[in-house]
Amino acid sequence: MRVAARLTGVSPERMRAWEARHGAIRPSRTPGGSRRYSLADLDRLRLLREAIEAGYRIGELAPLDLDGLRACVPASAPGVDARFGPILTAFERLDSRTARRLLLEQLAELGTLAFARECVLGMSEEIGQRWERGELSVATEHLATNLFRSMLTEALAEEQPIALGPRIVFATPGGERHDLGVLAAALVARDADAVPIFLGADVPEDELVRSVRDARADVLALGFVMSSPEEMEAQVRRLRRAIPESIAIWLGGAAAQHCPPVRGVDRVVELEQLTAFVLEAAGAQGALKDRGSLETPTAEEPG
Image (cartoon, rainbow, N blue to C red):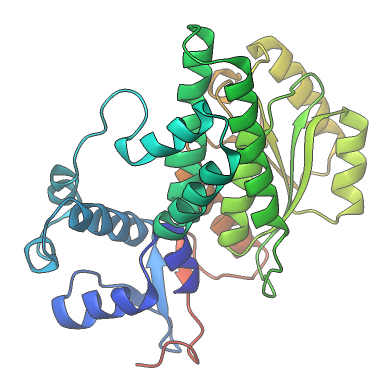
């Protein structure tokens, strides 16, 4: 449940209440009686939270299916989400202290996955587009990017409970200098009980191969933003040949969806998919038994 809470921004106490009093969420159970949250359950929890923030009551929402819940959540308008307007204002004023405080509040409210997807990556994309249009200064763009990176790095470096999930090396390969998305992905994977090893940007191929070996990694996760399909395919094929087949290779980032298929290589198109990939890798190594599920120890979740 602690993992589900971090990923959705819904507290364990509220999840229990929604389940016991309203039947709004019905996680399956392991043979030992522990709660097990599927990806659909996580999506439902997130939508319930967003609909309640929009003014609905849990009693109204409990009977609805996912499509019904989505209809209750206000569609995001183009540009920066209204929730993040004060953060953008702080960036424009070069007020890093206020921006950091507001970002920490959003992290606590949203949970890791929504914070990474909606706040950090969403704002980063919008700020980059405004900078390209000449609406924001270079200083504002640099301040925002550096603050996003420092906060994600600090969160990733926090002491982690004993993790049973896969060991995943995160990096961008040689020529790719944009690593914010990979850093966000590493944090999301950490909150799904993986063990992330974040190497940063522009890592040469031979160093990637060596790092995977030295870290005894189960997965190599690569971010691509600027590479052409031809460059990606050539690079990924070389890495696939150099790395044992037992070690998975995942591709993510804005450019990854354009990479031609390579045998033994998977594409993670959306950040939400990363949790499913982590759980599948964990199941393969025996840390979790079923794909697409999250378990809570029975001692923490009696009954």
